[in-house]
Length: 370
Image (cartoon, rainbow, N blue to C red; front, side, top):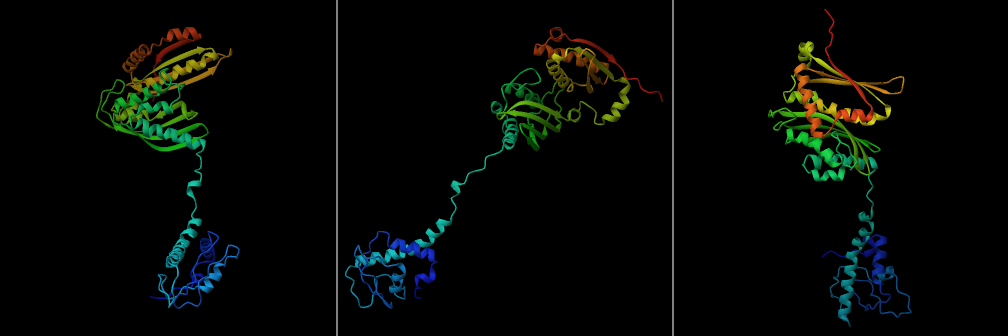
Protein backbone atom coordinates (compact mmCIF):
# COMPACT_ATOMS: atom_id res chain seq x y z
CA UNK A 1 0.00 0.00 0.00
CA UNK A 2 1.52 3.39 -0.94
CA UNK A 3 2.55 5.61 1.95
CA UNK A 4 0.49 8.50 3.21
CA UNK A 5 1.65 12.03 2.35
CA UNK A 6 2.14 14.48 5.21
CA UNK A 7 -1.11 16.25 5.92
CA UNK A 8 0.27 19.74 5.35
CA UNK A 9 1.33 18.75 1.79
CA UNK A 10 -2.16 17.61 0.84
CA UNK A 11 -4.52 20.09 2.46
CA UNK A 12 -4.65 23.87 1.95
CA UNK A 13 -3.64 26.01 4.91
CA UNK A 14 -7.20 27.04 5.77
CA UNK A 15 -8.23 23.39 6.02
CA UNK A 16 -5.30 22.64 8.32
CA UNK A 17 -6.59 25.38 10.58
CA UNK A 18 -10.01 23.72 10.57
CA UNK A 19 -8.50 20.38 11.55
CA UNK A 20 -6.40 21.92 14.33
CA UNK A 21 -9.53 23.50 15.71
CA UNK A 22 -11.27 20.13 15.65
CA UNK A 23 -8.42 18.42 17.54
CA UNK A 24 -8.40 21.08 20.26
CA UNK A 25 -12.13 21.71 20.32
CA UNK A 26 -12.48 20.67 23.97
CA UNK A 27 -9.47 22.63 25.16
CA UNK A 28 -7.67 19.55 26.56
CA UNK A 29 -6.07 16.53 24.95
CA UNK A 30 -5.74 13.06 26.39
CA UNK A 31 -3.60 11.59 23.66
CA UNK A 32 -1.31 8.69 24.69
CA UNK A 33 2.31 8.66 23.72
CA UNK A 34 2.19 6.32 20.71
CA UNK A 35 5.04 5.90 18.22
CA UNK A 36 3.83 4.69 14.82
CA UNK A 37 5.78 2.30 12.62
CA UNK A 38 8.16 4.12 10.31
CA UNK A 39 7.49 7.53 11.92
CA UNK A 40 10.11 9.94 13.10
CA UNK A 41 8.58 10.86 16.40
CA UNK A 42 5.85 10.29 18.95
CA UNK A 43 2.39 11.57 19.56
CA UNK A 44 2.00 14.27 22.15
CA UNK A 45 1.68 13.14 25.74
CA UNK A 46 -1.08 14.09 28.13
CA UNK A 47 -0.79 17.72 29.14
CA UNK A 48 -2.09 19.68 32.07
CA UNK A 49 -4.83 22.27 31.86
CA UNK A 50 -2.29 25.06 32.52
CA UNK A 51 0.09 23.96 29.80
CA UNK A 52 -0.24 25.75 26.47
CA UNK A 53 -1.73 23.40 23.86
CA UNK A 54 0.66 22.32 21.11
CA UNK A 55 0.05 23.79 17.72
CA UNK A 56 -1.12 21.67 14.89
CA UNK A 57 2.23 22.12 13.13
CA UNK A 58 3.96 20.78 16.26
CA UNK A 59 1.68 17.80 16.15
CA UNK A 60 2.41 17.20 12.48
CA UNK A 61 6.19 17.45 13.07
CA UNK A 62 5.95 14.70 15.65
CA UNK A 63 3.39 12.59 13.79
CA UNK A 64 3.68 12.59 9.97
CA UNK A 65 1.53 10.03 8.23
CA UNK A 66 3.65 7.18 6.93
CA UNK A 67 3.32 3.75 5.39
CA UNK A 68 1.87 2.28 8.58
CA UNK A 69 -1.90 2.01 9.04
CA UNK A 70 -3.85 3.97 11.62
CA UNK A 71 -5.43 0.76 12.78
CA UNK A 72 -3.46 -0.20 15.83
CA UNK A 73 -0.37 -1.78 14.22
CA UNK A 74 2.62 -0.23 16.01
CA UNK A 75 6.33 -1.15 16.15
CA UNK A 76 7.16 -3.14 19.30
CA UNK A 77 5.13 -0.83 21.51
CA UNK A 78 2.42 -1.54 24.04
CA UNK A 79 -0.51 0.85 24.17
CA UNK A 80 -1.69 1.31 27.72
CA UNK A 81 -5.06 2.58 26.64
CA UNK A 82 -5.93 0.89 23.36
CA UNK A 83 -9.46 2.23 23.33
CA UNK A 84 -8.15 5.76 23.62
CA UNK A 85 -5.60 5.23 20.83
CA UNK A 86 -8.21 3.69 18.60
CA UNK A 87 -10.55 6.63 19.29
CA UNK A 88 -7.76 9.08 18.42
CA UNK A 89 -7.12 7.29 15.13
CA UNK A 90 -10.78 7.32 14.19
CA UNK A 91 -11.18 10.96 15.27
CA UNK A 92 -8.18 11.98 13.19
CA UNK A 93 -9.40 10.12 10.10
CA UNK A 94 -12.91 11.56 10.55
CA UNK A 95 -11.48 15.05 10.87
CA UNK A 96 -9.46 14.66 7.66
CA UNK A 97 -12.52 13.42 5.79
CA UNK A 98 -14.64 16.27 7.10
CA UNK A 99 -12.24 19.06 6.10
CA UNK A 100 -13.14 19.17 2.38
CA UNK A 101 -16.83 19.09 3.27
CA UNK A 102 -16.49 21.92 5.79
CA UNK A 103 -14.34 23.98 3.45
CA UNK A 104 -16.68 23.56 0.50
CA UNK A 105 -19.78 24.09 2.60
CA UNK A 106 -18.49 27.50 3.65
CA UNK A 107 -18.25 28.49 -0.01
CA UNK A 108 -21.75 27.34 -1.04
CA UNK A 109 -24.05 30.35 -1.32
CA UNK A 110 -27.21 30.20 0.71
CA UNK A 111 -29.76 30.55 -2.05
CA UNK A 112 -32.60 30.39 0.42
CA UNK A 113 -31.57 33.80 1.71
CA UNK A 114 -31.62 35.42 -1.73
CA UNK A 115 -34.68 37.57 -2.20
CA UNK A 116 -36.80 37.07 -5.33
CA UNK A 117 -37.13 40.39 -7.18
CA UNK A 118 -40.61 41.82 -6.85
CA UNK A 119 -42.55 42.24 -10.10
CA UNK A 120 -43.15 45.77 -11.31
CA UNK A 121 -46.67 47.19 -11.65
CA UNK A 122 -46.47 46.74 -15.42
CA UNK A 123 -45.55 43.07 -15.05
CA UNK A 124 -48.32 42.44 -12.52
CA UNK A 125 -50.93 44.03 -14.79
CA UNK A 126 -49.72 42.00 -17.77
CA UNK A 127 -50.04 38.80 -15.74
CA UNK A 128 -53.61 39.72 -14.78
CA UNK A 129 -54.62 40.00 -18.44
CA UNK A 130 -52.63 36.93 -19.45
CA UNK A 131 -54.27 34.83 -16.74
CA UNK A 132 -57.68 36.27 -17.61
CA UNK A 133 -57.42 34.77 -21.10
CA UNK A 134 -55.46 31.58 -20.44
CA UNK A 135 -57.09 30.44 -17.20
CA UNK A 136 -60.56 31.98 -17.24
CA UNK A 137 -61.68 32.33 -20.87
CA UNK A 138 -59.82 29.43 -22.48
CA UNK A 139 -60.69 27.06 -19.62
CA UNK A 140 -64.28 28.35 -19.27
CA UNK A 141 -63.69 29.10 -15.61
CA UNK A 142 -65.96 32.12 -15.33
CA UNK A 143 -65.80 32.07 -11.54
CA UNK A 144 -62.26 33.44 -11.86
CA UNK A 145 -63.61 36.63 -13.44
CA UNK A 146 -64.29 38.04 -10.00
CA UNK A 147 -60.52 37.96 -9.41
CA UNK A 148 -59.79 39.98 -12.57
CA UNK A 149 -62.82 42.20 -13.24
CA UNK A 150 -63.73 45.05 -10.89
CA UNK A 151 -67.27 45.53 -9.61
CA UNK A 152 -67.52 48.94 -11.31
CA UNK A 153 -66.54 47.56 -14.73
CA UNK A 154 -69.16 48.65 -17.32
CA UNK A 155 -70.24 46.41 -20.19
CA UNK A 156 -71.95 47.31 -23.45
CA UNK A 157 -75.39 46.42 -22.11
CA UNK A 158 -75.38 48.64 -18.99
CA UNK A 159 -74.46 45.74 -16.76
CA UNK A 160 -71.57 46.10 -14.34
CA UNK A 161 -68.92 43.91 -12.82
CA UNK A 162 -67.79 40.41 -13.80
CA UNK A 163 -71.29 39.55 -15.10
CA UNK A 164 -71.05 42.31 -17.71
CA UNK A 165 -67.74 40.97 -18.97
CA UNK A 166 -69.03 37.40 -18.95
CA UNK A 167 -72.03 38.32 -21.10
CA UNK A 168 -69.76 39.60 -23.88
CA UNK A 169 -67.67 36.44 -23.72
CA UNK A 170 -70.71 34.15 -23.81
CA UNK A 171 -71.79 35.71 -27.12
CA UNK A 172 -68.60 34.32 -28.65
CA UNK A 173 -68.68 31.01 -26.76
CA UNK A 174 -72.28 30.33 -27.81
CA UNK A 175 -71.24 30.61 -31.45
CA UNK A 176 -67.81 28.98 -31.06
CA UNK A 177 -68.00 26.47 -28.17
CA UNK A 178 -64.38 25.41 -28.78
CA UNK A 179 -63.09 28.98 -28.99
CA UNK A 180 -59.51 29.60 -27.86
CA UNK A 181 -57.79 32.96 -27.48
CA UNK A 182 -54.11 32.66 -28.40
CA UNK A 183 -52.19 35.65 -27.04
CA UNK A 184 -49.80 37.09 -29.63
CA UNK A 185 -48.55 40.14 -27.76
CA UNK A 186 -48.89 41.90 -24.41
CA UNK A 187 -47.80 45.48 -23.76
CA UNK A 188 -48.24 47.38 -20.49
CA UNK A 189 -47.59 50.93 -19.38
CA UNK A 190 -48.72 52.16 -16.00
CA UNK A 191 -52.26 50.95 -15.34
CA UNK A 192 -53.04 50.21 -19.02
CA UNK A 193 -52.50 46.93 -20.88
CA UNK A 194 -52.87 46.18 -24.59
CA UNK A 195 -53.29 42.58 -25.69
CA UNK A 196 -53.31 41.22 -29.24
CA UNK A 197 -54.76 37.79 -29.85
CA UNK A 198 -55.92 35.31 -32.47
CA UNK A 199 -59.30 33.70 -31.84
CA UNK A 200 -59.83 30.23 -33.26
CA UNK A 201 -62.86 28.00 -33.12
CA UNK A 202 -65.66 26.25 -34.99
CA UNK A 203 -69.02 27.89 -35.75
CA UNK A 204 -71.31 25.19 -34.32
CA UNK A 205 -73.68 27.49 -32.41
CA UNK A 206 -75.89 30.47 -33.32
CA UNK A 207 -74.32 33.92 -33.56
CA UNK A 208 -76.87 36.72 -33.25
CA UNK A 209 -79.37 35.82 -35.97
CA UNK A 210 -76.97 33.57 -37.93
CA UNK A 211 -77.42 29.81 -37.87
CA UNK A 212 -74.39 27.52 -37.32
CA UNK A 213 -72.32 26.85 -40.44
CA UNK A 214 -69.70 24.45 -39.11
CA UNK A 215 -67.01 26.73 -40.54
CA UNK A 216 -63.57 27.06 -38.98
CA UNK A 217 -62.92 30.57 -37.70
CA UNK A 218 -59.58 32.34 -37.22
CA UNK A 219 -59.94 35.98 -36.31
CA UNK A 220 -57.55 38.65 -35.05
CA UNK A 221 -58.42 41.06 -32.26
CA UNK A 222 -57.05 43.55 -29.77
CA UNK A 223 -58.11 44.60 -26.28
CA UNK A 224 -57.29 47.81 -24.42
CA UNK A 225 -57.71 47.47 -20.66
CA UNK A 226 -57.36 49.84 -17.75
CA UNK A 227 -56.68 48.33 -14.31
CA UNK A 228 -56.92 49.49 -10.73
CA UNK A 229 -55.72 47.47 -7.74
CA UNK A 230 -55.08 44.48 -10.01
CA UNK A 231 -58.54 44.39 -11.61
CA UNK A 232 -59.97 45.60 -14.92
CA UNK A 233 -62.12 48.71 -14.59
CA UNK A 234 -62.42 49.58 -18.30
CA UNK A 235 -62.09 47.64 -21.52
CA UNK A 236 -62.31 48.30 -25.23
CA UNK A 237 -62.11 45.48 -27.77
CA UNK A 238 -61.51 45.66 -31.52
CA UNK A 239 -61.85 42.67 -33.85
CA UNK A 240 -61.81 42.02 -37.58
CA UNK A 241 -65.59 41.97 -37.87
CA UNK A 242 -65.80 41.89 -41.66
CA UNK A 243 -63.36 38.97 -41.69
CA UNK A 244 -65.33 37.22 -38.94
CA UNK A 245 -68.61 37.61 -40.83
CA UNK A 246 -66.97 36.40 -44.02
CA UNK A 247 -65.89 33.23 -42.25
CA UNK A 248 -69.50 32.74 -41.15
CA UNK A 249 -70.63 33.23 -44.77
CA UNK A 250 -72.55 36.34 -43.71
CA UNK A 251 -70.51 38.54 -46.07
CA UNK A 252 -69.03 37.71 -49.46
CA UNK A 253 -65.35 36.88 -49.48
CA UNK A 254 -64.61 39.62 -52.03
CA UNK A 255 -66.11 42.69 -50.42
CA UNK A 256 -64.71 45.17 -52.91
CA UNK A 257 -66.28 43.59 -55.94
CA UNK A 258 -69.48 42.73 -54.06
CA UNK A 259 -69.91 46.26 -52.74
CA UNK A 260 -69.02 47.75 -56.07
CA UNK A 261 -71.65 45.72 -57.86
CA UNK A 262 -74.36 46.43 -55.26
CA UNK A 263 -73.41 49.99 -54.43
CA UNK A 264 -76.45 51.45 -56.09
CA UNK A 265 -78.68 49.43 -53.74
CA UNK A 266 -76.96 50.54 -50.57
CA UNK A 267 -78.81 52.81 -48.15
CA UNK A 268 -77.51 55.09 -45.41
CA UNK A 269 -79.42 55.56 -42.22
CA UNK A 270 -78.44 58.96 -40.79
CA UNK A 271 -79.28 60.28 -37.31
CA UNK A 272 -78.57 63.86 -36.20
CA UNK A 273 -78.73 64.47 -32.45
CA UNK A 274 -78.72 67.81 -30.59
CA UNK A 275 -77.92 67.59 -26.89
CA UNK A 276 -76.54 69.63 -23.98
CA UNK A 277 -72.84 69.08 -23.38
CA UNK A 278 -73.50 67.77 -19.84
CA UNK A 279 -75.54 64.90 -21.34
CA UNK A 280 -72.66 63.73 -23.54
CA UNK A 281 -71.25 60.96 -21.30
CA UNK A 282 -74.52 59.03 -20.87
CA UNK A 283 -75.46 59.60 -24.49
CA UNK A 284 -72.12 58.33 -25.82
CA UNK A 285 -72.40 55.21 -23.67
CA UNK A 286 -75.68 54.35 -25.40
CA UNK A 287 -74.21 55.16 -28.83
CA UNK A 288 -71.37 52.69 -28.22
CA UNK A 289 -73.88 49.98 -27.27
CA UNK A 290 -75.90 50.51 -30.44
CA UNK A 291 -72.89 50.68 -32.77
CA UNK A 292 -71.44 47.46 -31.36
CA UNK A 293 -74.78 45.71 -31.72
CA UNK A 294 -75.57 46.62 -35.34
CA UNK A 295 -72.12 45.61 -36.61
CA UNK A 296 -73.04 41.94 -36.15
CA UNK A 297 -76.35 42.18 -38.01
CA UNK A 298 -76.74 40.77 -41.56
CA UNK A 299 -76.43 43.35 -44.32
CA UNK A 300 -74.32 45.78 -42.27
CA UNK A 301 -71.60 47.42 -44.39
CA UNK A 302 -70.02 50.16 -42.28
CA UNK A 303 -70.81 53.06 -39.98
CA UNK A 304 -69.30 56.37 -38.90
CA UNK A 305 -69.95 59.11 -36.33
CA UNK A 306 -69.25 62.86 -36.32
CA UNK A 307 -69.67 65.65 -33.79
CA UNK A 308 -69.34 69.40 -33.46
CA UNK A 309 -70.29 72.15 -31.01
CA UNK A 310 -72.84 74.77 -32.07
CA UNK A 311 -72.80 78.49 -31.24
CA UNK A 312 -74.63 77.84 -27.95
CA UNK A 313 -72.14 75.27 -26.70
CA UNK A 314 -74.46 72.34 -27.35
CA UNK A 315 -73.32 69.14 -29.03
CA UNK A 316 -74.38 68.15 -32.54
CA UNK A 317 -73.74 64.45 -33.09
CA UNK A 318 -74.29 62.59 -36.40
CA UNK A 319 -74.22 58.82 -37.01
CA UNK A 320 -74.24 57.17 -40.42
CA UNK A 321 -74.90 53.44 -40.85
CA UNK A 322 -74.59 51.91 -44.32
CA UNK A 323 -76.67 48.85 -45.20
CA UNK A 324 -76.64 46.62 -48.26
CA UNK A 325 -80.25 47.46 -49.15
CA UNK A 326 -83.59 48.56 -47.77
CA UNK A 327 -84.47 45.04 -46.63
CA UNK A 328 -81.31 44.77 -44.55
CA UNK A 329 -82.04 48.14 -42.92
CA UNK A 330 -85.60 47.16 -42.02
CA UNK A 331 -84.37 43.90 -40.54
CA UNK A 332 -81.80 45.84 -38.49
CA UNK A 333 -84.44 48.24 -37.15
CA UNK A 334 -86.55 45.32 -35.93
CA UNK A 335 -83.52 43.67 -34.32
CA UNK A 336 -82.57 46.89 -32.51
CA UNK A 337 -86.09 47.34 -31.13
CA UNK A 338 -86.12 43.74 -29.91
CA UNK A 339 -82.77 44.35 -28.17
CA UNK A 340 -84.14 47.51 -26.53
CA UNK A 341 -87.08 45.53 -25.19
CA UNK A 342 -84.77 42.82 -23.90
CA UNK A 343 -82.65 45.40 -22.08
CA UNK A 344 -85.63 47.37 -20.80
CA UNK A 345 -84.31 50.50 -22.51
CA UNK A 346 -86.67 53.26 -23.72
CA UNK A 347 -84.96 55.77 -26.02
CA UNK A 348 -87.83 58.30 -25.87
CA UNK A 349 -87.60 58.48 -22.07
CA UNK A 350 -83.82 59.06 -22.17
CA UNK A 351 -84.14 61.73 -24.86
CA UNK A 352 -86.75 63.59 -22.83
CA UNK A 353 -84.81 63.33 -19.58
CA UNK A 354 -81.55 64.55 -21.15
CA UNK A 355 -83.23 67.13 -23.40
CA UNK A 356 -82.05 65.45 -26.60
CA UNK A 357 -83.66 66.00 -30.00
CA UNK A 358 -83.07 63.78 -33.04
CA UNK A 359 -83.60 64.00 -36.78
CA UNK A 360 -83.29 60.79 -38.80
CA UNK A 361 -83.71 59.65 -42.34
CA UNK A 362 -82.69 57.15 -44.99
CA UNK A 363 -80.51 58.29 -47.90
CA UNK A 364 -78.94 56.84 -51.02
CA UNK A 365 -75.58 57.83 -52.36
CA UNK A 366 -75.56 59.95 -55.51
CA UNK A 367 -73.00 58.45 -57.86
CA UNK A 368 -71.10 60.46 -60.43
CA UNK A 369 -72.34 60.09 -63.97
CA UNK A 370 -69.78 58.52 -66.29
